[in-house]
Amino acid sequence: MLSDILGSLAHLNHIRPSEIPHIDLYMDQVTSFMNEHLQNSRRFEDDKILTKTMINNYAKNKLLPPPQKKRYSKEHMFLLIFIYYMKSFLPLTDIQSILDPICTAHFGCKDGWCVEEVYQEIFTLGEERIKQIGHDILDNFHTAANSFSDYEGDDRDELQLFAFICLLSFDIYLKKEVIEKLIDGLNKPNQ
Image (tube, rainbow, N blue to C red; front, side):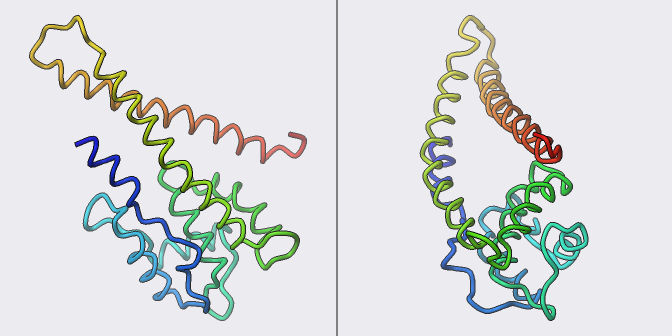
């Protein structure tokens, strides 16, 4: 089961920068594109990737700039992808804190890199991390497989699975703590 899960990491739907349409899209087209390209990342069949309500909330909460004439640019699409990944573990206020400097400096190619170039760089970094993350998961699995070695009960496998899930959860918890401290630093001008 673990090898299937690790194999699926390499096949997760990542939206390559070249897959984003070169024309501005209406909201229905945006939701269709995202739902089609990220459908394999859904846990349950009826999970929603992106809805009109979500997009309206993101714009209302200033996570992304408003559309131009009801159409969303490539830059909007890249920001929506960032939001999609972050919203599973961060509140919208934290995501807004993270994206605000990116939108201010890079949306519309104001100074330096455009949002598209920022996305391309992050996409490349993420692709390189997949193998490392797979190795980290395997390390946690082996650690958990060696746990409860003195335990003689019939439920030892269940305890080892529980240990594995706890180790993975602890990794997420620690990384989330670091992310939150970095966000808190963004919100303090002197940091």
